[in-house]
Image (cartoon, rainbow, N blue to C red):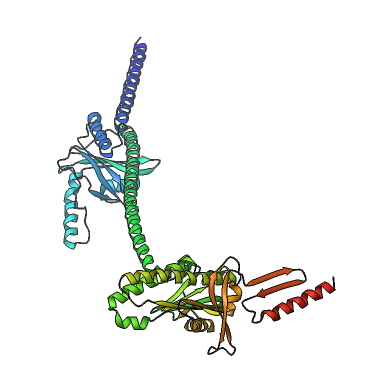
Length: 501
């Protein structure tokens, strides 16, 4: 009977122990659940840490505790949050391997310390010695929180896949902080908190990165606005400058330079050009009679009108020499030798019409003595391009062709256009000319036949040209000196053709 009673009593004890164990496991599950719910409600590091420390005190009676996080360089820990201390010590640093917390961080192992009161005098002596030698510091400017009469300390590593996130530290004035049976549960809670803290840290890093990106985007946007403004201002300045520079170049030259077609360096070439030269008769005398201001105004009006006409017909204005004007056709753009020559003579005729209008205007302003022009045109091979030095260039033409145009201008009549035979042969189908005397020009060994422009016509009445296979006929009536001889020659040709038909 007594044996049976013993077995019953033993069974009751076993059941009681199982019940106690079940109650403990249920409590542990509840604790894990409650702490998990609290720490996963937020992505705020400090709120997660303070919630965890408060709940640990509620469930385990940890009156003094703290959580420290690993720094980015993983060389020390920073105090994130504390509980129960008079001085919170947020931000205090603990180096890896220094003190209980530092050793736990380095070893990633839970560590218990007891009888700490006996060690305080030793640590104080070490601290004083370090201060005397001034070789090191035990702590940073922010003092690590701690109890004056601490007797025991437990530090638990907070891990995620064996990667240290931080350390959970508990201090007490009692010898034992918690039973060893609680270590597994507290370790689970510490690691769970580590996971929540890491998620929050990553979230904060992402928010910080987004904030920095937004700031960088705003700065970039501001920079772009400022850059666009500066570019606009600079473009406006360059436009104004280019407009000023354009007045120093012929439009064709200006366009060729700024489009990159013409290199800004010393370079020349030989090519056929039609050269125009004009001068005002009586201008020297006029300079003596007029005030400089009036003379300047008059000359400006004249050169402006003539320049507009030159540009209209596609001429390249080489230079102004006082009242003289040098223009050429065929570079940098050419429409062909014949078209360039026709355009040049057409320009000269147009200039004479504009000069006549100016003369009427000047007469109304009291300029009694009229200004008249002489013009010379020659077509020939010239050297054209950039002349000068590497620092100073002049786009111009040189050669006998330029000299001949100048000599033709000097031999021209008042308000007349005198051409060389080279130009006449190119324009005779479009413009009627009158043959003049041949002139001798310095530098040219043969006499130069000249022609005076009469009028512009779609067909030249003096020119008869017919071309068929086997027959090329060209008669220029202005060139014929004796009509009877010309008629005789043509009659003989006709008689010969009839006899063979």
